[in-house]
Image (cartoon, rainbow, N blue to C red):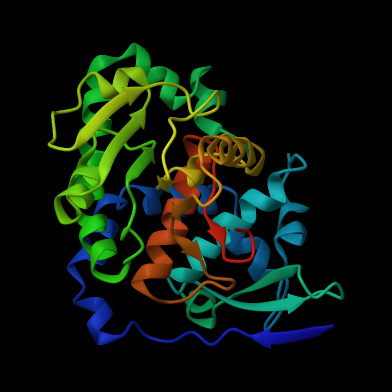
Length: 301
């Protein structure tokens, strides 16, 4: 069994000045206080501290000290502790197990601090956040307006570095919201016919864009045909099983030489003290709380 000590490093100066990352962090600022509150309420810091100076604990070991737990408790604890680590409240090392693939994170309470599952939204409300938005037009509007704003910020960056839209004739954006992303792509590549595909209650409020057709439907039943299908910021809303079902539907809708373009954030194998790592970890916890999804590492993809 091999192991590697996590090397926490300060944020790079250019990263600190990145307005896109700052905007993303601001958009998720409500998440961290709730994570920290949960950690305090569950006494996670105390559990790790009581293991002794220099001791490391894995998420299953921490979960074993909780008064009530389920099979998913360790996985949820892992998300929380990774977020705390990305904010420099914990130290971390990883151990690669004998199969060479599974990475187990073990976390240690920092000396400075010593001195001084499932879809939770649905469990609380009895329905998913998407069902709530279907029933509440105001919530639906605010959510989709917010997603359109975030998408604009992200897509500017994507178009700077990704050049895979060349030679695409028909591009389908699955889960494309109100079409802001597709509009920016078609504006840069006007030869593309864009099909913006999302739920009917989303599409009915989408503005008209040149070169973009709005289509309503359920991506888990079928998706429109095109020679390329883009899935941006959607897979993280769903479980692995749901994502596989979606990808199979995309495969059916593509020609032999077609392609699927998946755009999602990548979780680091180990938490890092960087703006990007903090944001992805916050998003990972937010996905657990609301739609019941998760962010994924490159290996998990």
